[in-house]
Length: 508
Ligand SMILES: *Cc1c(COP(=O)(O)O)cnc(C)c1O
Image (cartoon, protein in one colour):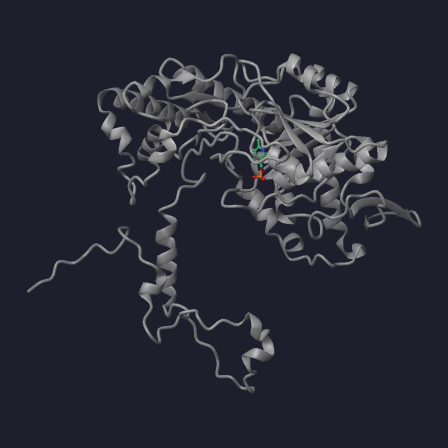
């Protein structure tokens, strides 16, 4: 009797442990020709465990096929459009990857003496100078390893500066549209968080701000363009109000993809900004890293930046660079060595290959792409806020709710059309938000496919809502039980009395 064969490829990929067969190996080592050292002479016995089942015993091809198959289950920016609002998932030119892997960069030891690492130091200096030019702020620290760590570093620098001025103050003002990391960073730095309500267009309400500032306010943290994708038109006035009250202005620069080469936060009056190199300046991100969140600051704040700093010196007529550890007012280190070096390499490579005109063009294209999507979808989905969007657009599910279809369902159905879902239910001030950021990566044809998919989903929502509500249908694993998230109305972020935590968001 012939047994029916099961389809073993691309159906259910078991664990690699399930492929294990006793004695099967993927390597062959020469016989040991020295005496074996007892394991506890090599590893602290306290760290040894005997409750591990052992390693899978598999051949090389078992391993390669297992992981190659798993990789086809995944979605990636190299696979299709990844319109994740706020998180800027853009295409990363392969040239940047190649340069980051060059031996002189990838294999240089962090303890290499300065004299032998001049090229590596030069790269740091050049990137600092480029980011200073782009942000319009004179000094840059490349040390923070992520956006959130940049926020923490920037706030620590602000705190030290205000202490030096005589009063560290205790309040951080944060608009209700802020990314969750903002209140979290402020709380970590010991600030009490005070929320300021945005106006109807999601901008900072000047009257609210005037009422909120006083001699206890250390910092206003704002995002520009705001998390709603709108340019903060009163930014200069906002900075003036905070400065007059003796506070400083921190800008969350994760949305710099809308500004690079067009306008500079330093010129608007901002004191500190962090950049997400892993969003705006190449480096694939997601899954927790690696990243880089450099901060750029005003002259007044420079002495407080983390050490070491790269400094130029002339010795016997020869210019050289060295790492300076003698920074008595510094907040100290926030990360080992000089930051995530390979991310910095990619960023400089990205900046140099595009050049000033290319950077500006990337920004303009990102804004044009978002507006193209907004234009074609605004009659089908409600837009969350009136006004001209910049690099991202926020729609909501108000019209589709009539048919029982919610944002989560639309996002899931988008997977069936071959797109990564947009950011959903963030920002928290926009109920049912669908936040779409196409970036400059996408060409007209891909944008049109995305728009068509969104239009089809709107029709399906009306004519066959069950189809949308049970999506995705074309994936290996169907709908997971996320219904609870869809039923819950978008929560407004409410800070606790003395410290704060933000509501969970889907943005990274
Ligand atoms: C991504 C992001 C952050 C945090 O950056 P991480 O590198 O993920 O820590 C902060 N603010 C905004 C607006 C962001 O989009």
